[in-house]
Length: 75
Image (cartoon, rainbow, N blue to C red; front, side):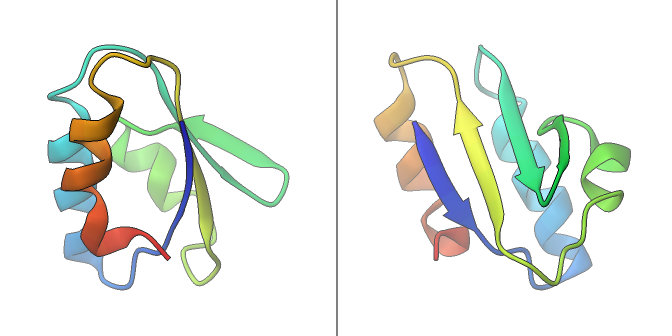
């Protein structure tokens, strides 16, 4: 599953990581040429958060549940 998300506040980063750690599988976030682990707060802060971020989740199981929880961030 691939989504475009926007993190508008610092608290959005913490909320996102709290959601993602509850799911098995890898979550990657990409911004420009950088790709980081979506479960890493420091990794996320290394991205340009002013731009949309591409989120990729590698499992089909639980993808719809994850999408529902990420709804506030999806653009």
